Image 1: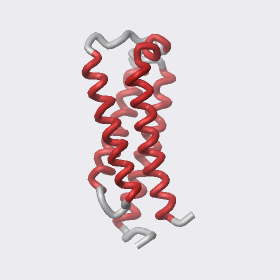
Image 2 (image 1 turned 60 degrees about the vertical axis):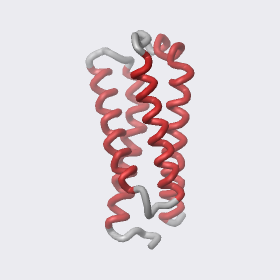
Image 3 (image 1 turned 30 degrees about the vertical axis):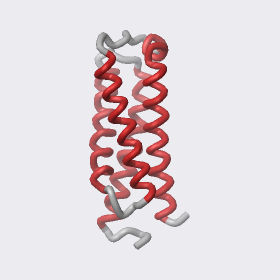
Length: 130
């Protein structure tokens, strides 16, 4: 598979990951939180705002998938966000705030962050498709 196709699919899958995860938790957090032994948020608006931003980053990844030569700042923001999500989930599991299984979602974000870093390194070298 040529690099361009690979990266386009990678960002499309990244977009779908964000959309599925955010929509699942947006509509299902009242069921999912207790399932993972977590209390429901006292003020869910802050959690829902976080989900909204994550959903919008998915839109950004979709835009990148449509044109790999543009929107690299969205990729940089995504890397920072995905690393923070991983670190926060790892910390929360370590101190007992969340079930350790939730770190699995953070690991997926960590993998995407690494793949996005590799994409930016390829672009910096001139891109395999240019």
